[in-house]
Length: 132
Image (cartoon, rainbow, N blue to C red; front, side):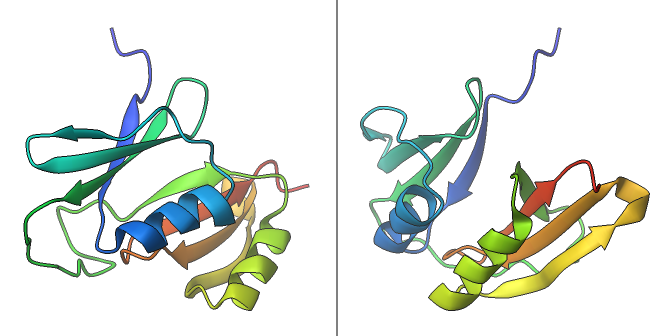
C-alpha cells in the first residue's frame, strides 16, 4: 500500500537563498524545470531516486511565520543521510549557516547527527549511520 515518501515540501521565504542552499551548497540535483501552478512557483530537487524536495514560492504576498522548535502539531525537521557529518558542519559554520546542534554521537540511535537551519528557518538534520 505505502511505497515510500514521494516528496518533502517547504514554503520558502527567500527563493534565491533557498535555491542556493539546496542546489549549490548541498549539491542536490534539480529535478526538472520549475512549474507555476495555482499562483505558486514549484522547484524540485532529488533527495533520492524516488523522493524529491519541493520548494514552493508563492507569487503573491503571504505572511511569514516562525514555528517553534517544540511546536506541537508541526513537523520539526527532515533528515538527510550523509557520509560525513563533520565536513557538513565545517562548511555550514564557515558559510554562516545557523547550527542548532553541533555534530553529536547519538549512541541510542546508532548515528552521528547535526542540526542546521535552512534560509526559511526549517530545521535540517544530517545523519551518518551506523555510528562506528
